[in-house]
Image (tube, rainbow, N blue to C red; front, top):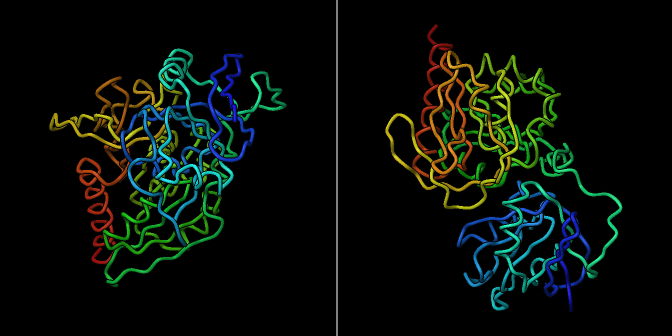
Length: 350
């Protein structure tokens, strides 16, 4: 059945429906990874976005994971050049009500997004759709829709394990899984949790998760978080990285072309090593807005020089723009845990 990807400027890309026809509008973005298709589609940072895959054949890396506890797709829609039926990706998307379109010239779509920057589109059955209201990629709506609805408490095997409070800005399950592997005791709270309630949990460290949308949508919450950052060792990941920078006086902006994929090179400032990282973001911390007396830039993106990691010179604050789970992130996370344990020893021994 004929389907169309229609951009808000009127340009039309024809294709074929994946599953049941369902019209859906969203910001059109592209991801550059060659593997990890389900991880891309289940990442909450894609909330409100129509994801275009640059790799030409999708769904050929085995069946989509199914069963209880498996995350559903969180993107608004999917655009692919060719879909492998054996992988059952189409049936999985259809089951969760996520529309998709195949047979599209994805190279042209990517060139358009690169030239235009942030641009919205709609997957539809007609080349001339009437969209009543385009979704706003800068809205707080996306964080509200992806944060945990209630507090979650996860115990640790050791009573000596550090207690971390994860402020959920709409992060994916991999962050929480990483904390559990490190033996941490974790309390996950919605991003809207009052700061007083967070303090009552007696956290030894705070972690601000990744998530979707514009970090400046969270400006109303910074005043409440700022006092916590001066007292409690904190780590920001992804959107959390941008939020920590904003809370400490820096500024953010939309990237000309977002970083989405599992193949982004990041250079570690102090060693010169380059790490290949997984990323999914459309905004960045403005380097010139950082006070050099307060912040050290620990990582840069090799391709465009954007800020990928920060460490505060006076407060136990650090952050990374890329996902946890690779050697570069491990180094940052280990430093964060060291700060947590050091503060705990000072409080115990005076």
